[in-house]
Amino acid sequence: MTRVFSGVKPTGHLTLGNYLGAMRRWAAVDQHEADALFCIVDLHALTVEHDPARVRRLSRQAATLLLASGLDPELCTVFVQSHVDEHTRLSYLLECVATDGEMRRMIQYKEKAPRERARGGSVRLSLLTYPALMAADILAYGADEVPVGDDQTQHVELTRDLAVRFNQRYGHTFTVPKATPPTVGARVMNLQDPTSKMGKSDDAGPGIVYLLDEPDVVRKKVMRAVTDSGRDVVHDREERPGVANLLEILAACTGGDPKELAGSYASYGALKKDTADAVVEVLRPLRERHQALCADPGYVDGVLRDGAERARAMARPTVDAAYRAIGLLPAVSGADPAPNAAR
Ligand code: TYM
Image 1 (tube, rainbow, N blue to C red):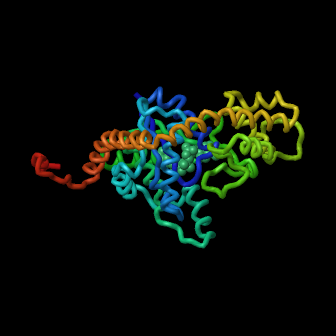
Image 2: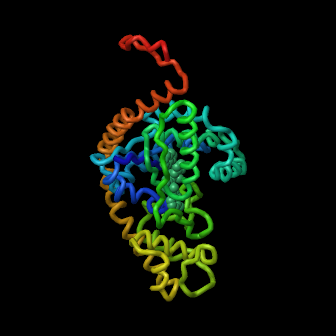
Image 3: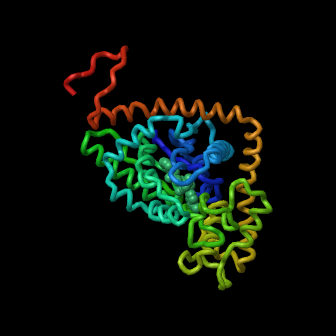
């Protein structure tokens, strides 16, 4: 059975981009068709300036939202990254396989490092080594597929390179995974600046639809989306990024095709209204389930505890194999038989 791994980082409130680019398919497809793990990757939230209490709060909220989106712990494994030590154990080995040049070439590092400097802070070393930890997240579980939005495909490409290199140097240890972005909704753009991604870590703004926004807030944000001075509705990402973004959001919410949908609108106003309605309808069940789950925090804790236990059992053999393959002497406990001196 195909193994799927994906994750979400608790650096801000989850957005429509997270949902359409990744989470929606996890619940609708991946958990049914694959042996799937979904992770709140909290260690990744420490790579930039952070408030400890906020990271804890957002981690719990992300877990609750994943379950509210329809993830069923009977069908898949939902857990928190820091509850499973195998991620950091493996990350170090992958840092010993990766080069600093590879890390510095990552688009996210190039974008985020200057932002951190501009905020008057220094750049944490973990922001540079982040892709090694992300590769460890994926490789520890032998994932075949990684359902992510477009912005993460470069990290998955690097993960592939590291897996291949490790296997060539030290013997076959890792499955080589591939990114599986959705056909529509892989890059939802900011409604006020449709040339940049709708990102949860950005400052709160009218261009970002959060999954827990009230319906009237969602409507206002979509109705005020920046379009352009043209009148006809066409799908053209280069020339008409604002309209293209609305068409793609509408298509992702309704299951249509953005180019075909363009033909059925004569004005931007009608397109915005239908897009707003579609987003509100897609988010409605999620908000309702989220509210119900918030009333039962013991349930969420139980899911995360069981999930971590399952994840640990899945990751440990692969990470142990990587430790042996790279040349580390296995630790011997009282119960272990004598180590094989020949290795
Ligand atoms: P994160 O938390 O930024 O985003 C979670 C998922 O949402 C997708 N996404 C989007 N898709 C479409 N349009 C957008 N505007 C948009 N914004 C976010 C992301 O592509 C992602 O799939 N590094 C990862 C987390 C991570 C991870 C992993 C993912 C850590 N380890 C291992 C997969 C496998 C991240 O920052 O995602």
